[in-house]
Amino acid sequence: RLQLLEEQRGLPAVTRDGLSLHLYANIELPEDVDWVLRSNAEGVGLFRSEFLFMNRADSPGEEEQFQAFSQVIKALGGAPVTIRSVDVGADKGLRDDEFRAAHGVLNPALGLRGLRLCLRRPEWFRPHLRAILRASALGPVRLMLPMVSSLVELQQTRALLAQIQEELRRDGHSFDPRLPVGIMVEVPAVAMAAHSFARDADFFSIGTNDLIQYALAVDRGDDDVNALFDPLHIGVLAMIQHTIAAGQTAGIPVAMCGEMAANPALTPLLIGLGLREFSMFPGAVPEVKAQIRQTSAAEARVLALRVLAGEDLGWSPDQSENI
Ligand code: PEP
Ligand code: MG
Figure 1: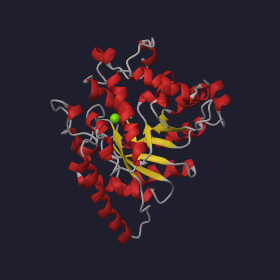
Figure 2: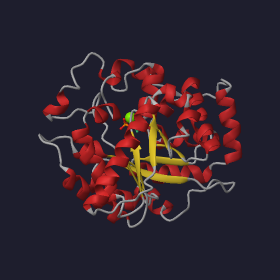
Figure 3: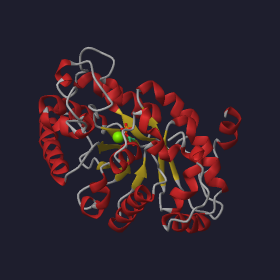
């Protein structure tokens, strides 16, 4: 891996037939940024900000969050950083009492998690958004909303952001007034209605870990049904293709930040489905880049059409085991 990292460092993520792609890194904590720099990713495509809140008894305040975001933005020296607003609930638990209420419910993956929980707790969402907005003054930042299922949630968040921008102006804080606000596509109905969401969202990022879980009704963390968690299911691939096409039609960027984007065995297929932006754990960047450089985009398109048509191309389950 180290050797591969050295070989790939500095080489562009371009297919054999000259198509340029973009590789970003997923991070959980500010410390991970060193790993991003070593991987030579173009920036951060997913900062899972909930990790700032996990494994502690209290919640970080606005200032502490601002410092954490600043650290990442400064370390990246002008490279883009996509900060995902806190995505807790379901598989991502907190010790904080405030959030405990969200757990222990019958069906947490379908319950109050991600953006739903944030909108329910503005006293807590507001300082979070303030910290992100303030950080946007320091470099190219995008805000990404997790677990969106309805357009209303996006509109409510935009309304809240507008209020907070007013407050920040009054308080003399700078921020990017045009902060791009995008959504994660991880609910099947959102993927199918992507053309409608594309009118209000500045970008999409496909969260395949949850999208597959919800599309196939297979708990992402349940070993008993693991074998059914199939990224190559034609229903899943059709949703991915539909989302990418809707984004392209609307002229907004579409990335993928779920584990599927990190699997080099799937890279040609994803290129064939039209994906141009990949975000993955930093360690996967060299391998995916090496795969891109061996791939022909024209051949990848043919591959994707054949897979979508249901042709059996002899994919073995092993090839998708790490997803
Ligand atoms: C996803 O669901 O694919 C994703 C990237 O988000 P997370 O794994 O943090 O839920
Ligand atoms: Mg998710």
